[in-house]
Image (cartoon, rainbow, N blue to C red; front, side, top):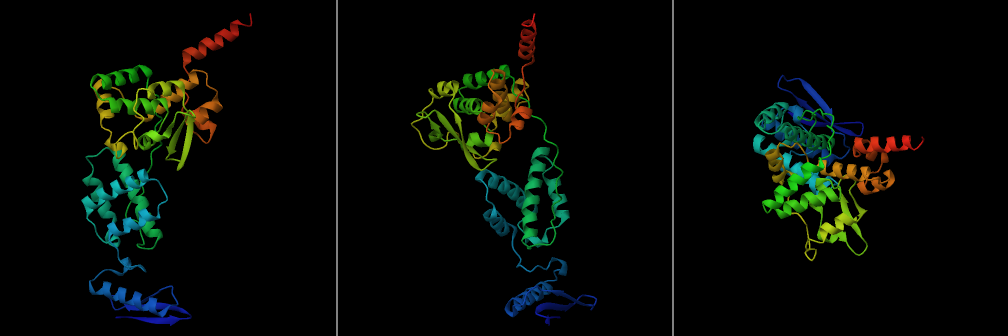
Amino acid sequence: MAYLRLQGSIYHLIYYNEKTERKSFSLKTTNRKKADSLLKQFQAQQVVALPFEIFSQKPKILFSDALLLFLKSRRTVQNTKDSYNYAALSWKIHTGDKYINLYTPEDYDLYRESISDKSQATIESYSFQLFVIFNWFVKEKYITDNPIVKPRRNQQKEVNPIPLNELAIIKRDLFVRGMFKQLDLVTITFLCALRISEALLMEYSDFDFENKVIYIRNVKGNRVDKIPMLQDIKDYCSQLDFSRSGRMFQYAHRQSISFWRFVNARYGFRNTFHSLRKARGSQLANSGVEPLLLRDFMRHHDIRTTLKYYIKIDQDKSREKIDSKLLAQF
């Protein structure tokens, strides 16, 4: 049995639990129609024996429907939305598309076990995306508690630049096997110091040969940057067909790029795509490019990021330069 009672100007719902104890809670509304609707919803949940703890002021909603609302609320680029979709699809496959107020921490534990065959990085990535999704459900009051345990985000391991001799081996391997589009992806990513997400968004029209600039869709900053078209970039691009339009590289997501893992494994290398960006930054720094110019080319907001994470000074060149200055004093 449940009924409404007006306390002041706020409606409260009065009910009796399974022990016939009288309970009540505020509906936080002064609107009678809304209060009646909430009462009917509560009574409907009692009929199907759902526990009171999952009662929400918003109607029950399936995970797939709630996910669409979540994605609509995100002001972010498509790649980020794709990451949420990958995690959500994995969740639905292993736990089912249920009403979101029925998921429990036990579902999450079973889910982690079900995807234990995946890499630790993938598991943590999916867990974090799901935590964000369910946290939004809590914020929007579709549920009261987040069933996903917030993963501890490990300190990001420093990515080392790819040694230029290893880069040469990889490029030669791709060329010999006729994987020219993959070779273009590796080379353009390196020469333009791109993040892999930026490389996958690159279009032929982003190369402005008349003004000698390149436009880059900066995913991290959700903006479009531009860098100067250096001579080695222009020389390489002279081999490509820029009469075409649209995306340069037809990969849906970074996880679709399998050739990089295989070629690394073939030679026992441990390079990531981000190693290409760091190698370009280090190469330019060791060539004498001034820090401020390098910061602009790397498109960093703070020059300290350029100096700390992307410049690996060649120790031999450093020693030779210092020695030459010391000898000049005598």
